[in-house]
Amino acid sequence: MKENKTQGKLGTGLEHRDIGQTGALKNSASQTARPRFKIKFTDYAIEKFTSSFMVGDRIKLRAYTSFDITKTSVLKGLTLCQYKKSMKKYFLLRYWFNKRACKITIGQFIPGKFGIKQCEDKVYEIAREHQDDKGIWIKNPLDTIRLKETRIERAVIDDSLKLTINEVIVRLCKANFPRAKREGRLTASSIQMKCKDLIGHNWRTRHLIFIDDNKGNGKVHFKANYSKRTTKPEDWDDLFKKFPAGHGINKDKRDNPKGERSVYDSNMGKYVIDELNPGLVRKYIEKKHRSFGTKKNILDTFKTLWAFAIDEKLFGDKIPTNPTKQISFKRPEESRSPGSVSSELSGSVLSTTRSQSSTSGSNMITIYDPVRDSRALIRQGQRMLS
Image (cartoon, rainbow, N blue to C red; front, side, top):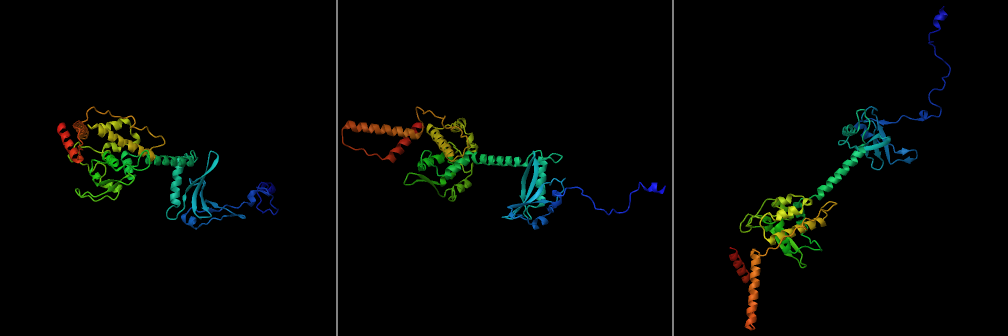
């Protein structure tokens, strides 16, 4: 009876025979594989750690070392990459996306500036935007980075090209008003006329001197304005700093009887130059009752500004249509400007004098004083207008 009761019980004694083969085969990789070394995810451990770049007889250019992180953490796949030449250390995130192994650089390890806290924040931000609730990558962070860089480059290009008219005027002034069709600069008289339309009718032009060199190229020099007690500007930047847009407008009735404003001081200067069209230009020129000559001069000024923008490549890839080509003004039958009246009067006086001298048959030569005659003709023309 006792023997039957003890047959179903386990023996408590040790077995002394050899244990047979269990688990892996004799030449399997599990018998020869060593446990991989992992770094603790602390700033101190990372700072003190130095990678081993030797693999057998070969030296690697960079070495990867995993962190001691649980597989369920968001930081799964985070490794440390160290370069042999510079010995710099970088946080690298490895992940699988669409059955492909990918990696992304999180940042360089810099003690005190970029450590585990900054790395965690960046990895959590990436995971929140590119993983679902189960931690599966649904978007590739590399595609997001490339898209962001492309957008930044496009934004920089747009900002550097879409300049306002005022910004183009400043660049034109700094370039000393180059010619449009050949090398060199405009003459001093032409520069003076362009400055009147672009930045004139303002006390800033009282600081400018226009001089031609030996080759006929004009150049602008600066001077002090003693009547307004303003010092001599150092350069164009200093001039526009003293007189920004809308400030320093000359309201003297003797100098500016019609209350004109330059392009720089008007709302026209706030437009982006790419937005210019024939309607805007014509509306600006015909906004006030201007003479034919004044309209023509302002239109020529816009042509100079547009040609400069094209030469300096300030537009985008697609250059807009020149808004000045479709604008023209009809010359009036009778001009009311004192200058044109005086020129007509001078022509009539000169023709009368020539006819008188020819009919008299004498050898007398008539000498004219141009200053005296021009002043007299201007006064006569003003009396006719009044």
